[in-house]
Length: 319
Length: 319
Image (cartoon, rainbow over all chains, first blue to last red; front, side, top):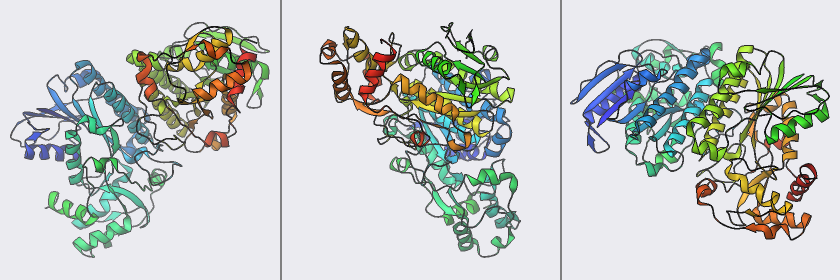
């Protein structure tokens, strides 16, 4: 069992690699090699199997050929140009998120080996006048280019899967919180930083009101769900192998209550409440009430409470 | 006012060109030039303004440059590789329906002139386990590559419109019936031929049962709706400028009743009822009960009855 993580240097890619190292197996077979591909060298991971790091630019088909071969059994495609970045650099977003995804699918098609392909989409596919809550059968109507690119990726994945070129399954990730490390270029950055920074005694800004509702998942549950997603049998996915990954809708106020319950009243005092005009337009379309059933029926799980998200961060990332 | 029809040699393109010639104006301005672009030379049209025919391969950006210039005010993008053809030739479908659409959008973006772009999608975007009736907010879940490619085209159109690169509006065409002329490579071909051929004393085959429900529009109403679509103000389209064009759900049995009412009992006797295995897989996902409101609210119209469809065919095409 040879596993490839494209975007293996990122937050989710690294945590996924470590989880695979701890398991040692996937889809009932021992993992013999893990390839961590990323645009820059990914950090290596200690594992009971061979771990290789490879540089790859997925917008270049020749580069994609160097990371996917006939022995590649399972691919996690996590690499993406995220929201604010794709909004700012229109060409680069399409190049990585659309052309890159298509290059990966085309490589698999031409190999003819039908690898399992786990694609990460995003709840950024939802937006506009579509009635909320957004469910499994709601129209994806993205209001940012990142969402459009991910919705296109889903359609490609579904079509290549239907044609038998890959054993695809796509999961629209909730906003991941609490993200460790430094902010990336996502407009949703504050949804982690208002916990991450204060829990470490640092200030952070929240640009929205306490009643702002959004859809969240912890990094730990996200990785568990990606692994479960990889293990699903194709028939179980039906005629739409892309779906929303389970998360929970919380308001900022509910999340702050959870932080207080776990870590006391002090961290919250480090939060400032300044609107940020440069991301206001993006966030406007992001008051997301999402309710999904399909992925839960397939065994994927949300967090039990946002207190869990806070605890996972303390245990996994600054423990 | 310079108007471009891409796919100007096809059935809808030709009827649209003739309708524009009869009107002489669009969006409140006199038409000064009509360009009919197609992969082969389009038939010229008599008009009170200049009509130019141009060969164009939309999968080639340099070819697209030759048909869209800074004076092009309104573009109708009708060219497509249709259902059974795109299903058979995977690469060609993506090349024309996805890359071609993107080339047209990119050309408009780089010109910076924000032309009105009327894109034709298809009800083939619907399918799978999504509950029927399919409405304005239903998940497009195509079960053929043609549908996937059209759904991708909608997402591109919507995103380029949101960014202000074009004044886009997309319309998912119902199955057009009664189509004149020869069958094209669409799996839906029989939905016209079982009327067109018998009304002219020729035999035709119907591969589905009389209770097969589907969503239809006459060519005449389709052209009227495309012109209305071109004339809509951008603000009226809201945050999802792609939508289903109004049609009506009829069963084969209801349509035969209409033919009998208009043309008597004889034509129906020329129909044979043999299943066709080569298109059964496609048609399986096509029992389409579609109900839409948005386009009707914007003033687009379905046929009043299928008897009208039969009459329009007799008047417009063999009159």
